[in-house]
Image (cartoon, rainbow, N blue to C red; front, side):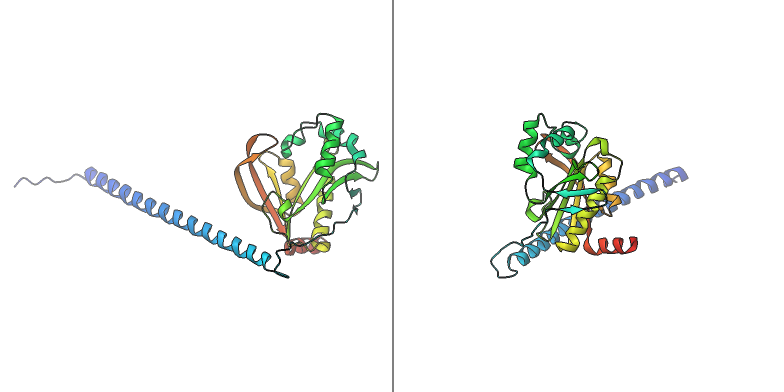
Length: 256
């Protein structure tokens, strides 16, 4: 009888093959479970969204009337006044918005002329919830900030939530003016308008905007990849952060 006695090396090779096969099977199972879990998560999110929508549509008098908000026309901080944009602000707007370090990072084109700035004020910035940021020291506009509630936001939020957007002229970078304006708009949104959650976003690479959000208490929520930016005619990665009223109250009380 010619028995073949396997060497130690052959037995070890067989064991490696067996372990590799077992590892592949386990990976396949994990991938399958991951796909199933992701699908269930999507289904749950869809159901929650439907429930939230149904709740908003059947609330009150069941007439699908959306909540109304009355915006103040003036907010103040130690150094700033937030007020509605006026067409007479076009000169100051153009002064800063023609700088390509501002608009493109926020997703809009640089302004090409005073007439262009007039047009933007009339068609965009004059909408309810947008404020010119005015420096008290000079009484001149230095930037812009907006509170976009519900369907006015690009983030698909409910009518008890809002998105905050902002920019400031390059000469005023690094002076803490935007965090000052954002914090006041947060206070106004939570304390006076009674909103439940605020959202902020920034495009990949805009580290200045990211720092503003972190400084004001926003925390990372999710990332959107391949977001089409209409004015720039390109796709970008967008990072989204948020803060709810309880979180804001906790931060405010701890700071007091």
